[in-house]
Image 1 (cartoon, rainbow, N blue to C red):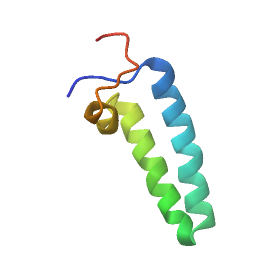
Image 2: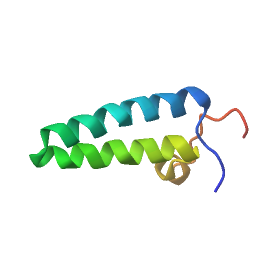
Image 3: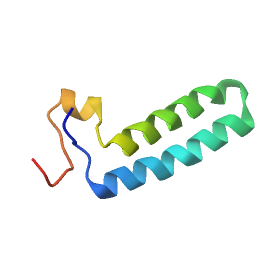
Image 4: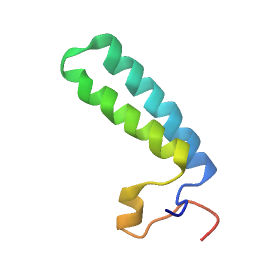
Length: 64
């Protein structure tokens, strides 16, 4: 697994994921899906790898 996320992309994912996770958890119901999306964003941001980017050959990492 190669890193394919740059620093700004990683920070943005973790921040947005945190907001979605908290919103989904606090509001419950159908927003559980929002919480799961938030968790996925946090994980991809933390590890620096996005499988969707990899599938389409995209990268925001300066190390290509």
